[in-house]
Amino acid sequence: MWAWLPASEEAPTATAAMAALTARFGAGLSMQMESPPKAPGAAWEINCRVPQGRTFSVWAQRSEKVETLHLQNDHHVLSEAEKQDLASSVWSLGVVLVFGDAPLDDFHFQLQALIAVAPQAVAAFDVAAYRLHHAEWVKESARSAAPPSPTSLFVMHFVSDAGKPGWIHTHGLDRCGRLELELFDITPDASRLLSELVNSTAAFFLEQGLPAPGETVEVGRDLPLLWLPWEEALSRVAPRHGGGKADRDAVHGNPTAVLFAPGKKFLGFFGSGLASAASHLPVLEGSPILYVSNSHTRRMEVLSRERLPTLKALFGKLGGNEQFKFLVKLGYPTADPEQFGSREHIWFEVHSFGGEHVDATCINQPHSVPALREGLRGLHALSLISDWTIFCPVGRFDAERVGLLVHVLESAPDELRTQLGL
Image (tube, rainbow, N blue to C red; front, top):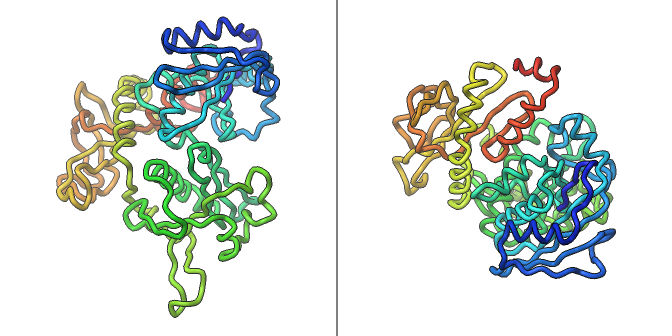
């Protein structure tokens, strides 16, 4: 991953970078110059090791132009001035490390190291995921007590001709010791819900490990899936809209996991035994129970409580603006813990905040909380909060990305401010 510096900023010397890293990680950090640098085009490179054993390298390089990159995400939230600063950047600073058994923790550390040497960064580029991250997101994530979401580790590409079914595939999971995920022949209308299913499956595989090919696993209630290597998948169910052999280039020809729903064979013998993951759309269109690990739930609770003051401040300014919708997720004890777990996490639309309570309307039909029902309004303890999100014309912003929304609103040009009713 590298960070673009503003055009007016020269690359720091190796000595200055060492001082910044020592200030961030302590005097126990050991560092050694790599001579000559291994990173292509690097002006200097430093190999580092923290006392706990994690190793990483930091380097300075001439900035690459945005046009040469297969960018995804967050480029659209850059202001015109930031885009110009990005286009005219001369120097970038990079951080590389090998991920281990806890890729989210490794990624969190990488962000901390990157922003330590490039505190004035305009944006950062995650090479493995072809993903641009706004500098505000990098800074806020680095400061947080919890690592970022699993979805920050990868991006999803939906490749199709206009209005036609297409091919969904991820980039970024292979560095985590997992296979990239794919879906074949997905219609544009179905791509949003199925992308959410891929997000949940990726998080499930990151936490639980990759099951054996063909082994059915439940990533949610009534949501069984299995995967096959792309070569076998093509031989059993040839895709009609992308993902075939002609698309298997140097980037997309590596081992991947193509996701299917289990299918029935005619008379028990004939057919592939595979169904499209799109067969799960009726479940996904309802209020599906997607299985979330305890560690992910705790991570979101930490973030949502850590940044709750920001949510309250934004609601105080924008709660009456019809273009902004504020939602909170509250974890209520269930009536049937054996079947539904100890807590059910339910979404509510916010009407107002008190000191320790939120006035909100339940927008999901609970599965195992008899005292609640969809459409019921009431006061709820904020101690139950486990997540929250803000919907607005410039996107969806949860606790992990709320700092980016604040930045966008503060730097919005007059035309956008008028459009948003600010």
